[in-house]
Length: 99
Image 1 (cartoon, one colour):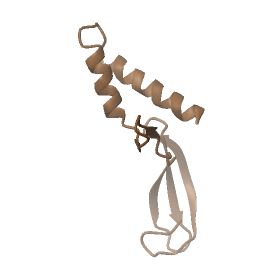
Image 2 (cartoon, helix red, strand yellow; image 1 turned 135 degrees about the vertical axis):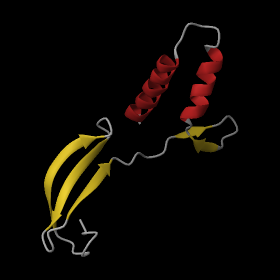
Image 3 (tube, rainbow, N blue to C red; image 1 turned 30 degrees about the vertical axis):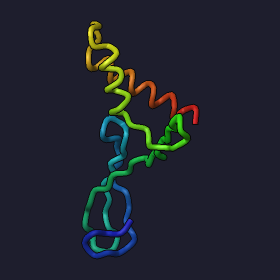
Image 4 (cartoon, rainbow, N blue to C red; image 1 turned 30 degrees about the horizontal axis):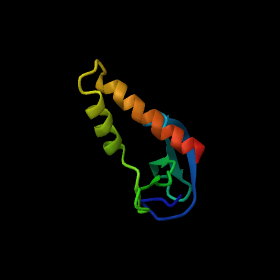
């Protein structure tokens, strides 16, 4: 990792822990050249999910569109917003896990 202070490319990890509810890793690093300590965050880069429309066009999956549809469908039902967000999370995770 390149030091933000001296731009030397040699550093060591001092501490590492999960961050952002387990979706990222926070690493505390120290430059081996100048001794400056700095923090980096590593996140898994997710490939965009594509939806194939009826006309054959492809567009990026939108959590917001799915959530709007669920909100509209459950309008007069005793379903909380947290439950609806949970459904969207499950759908997205299932799609990502099946490839």
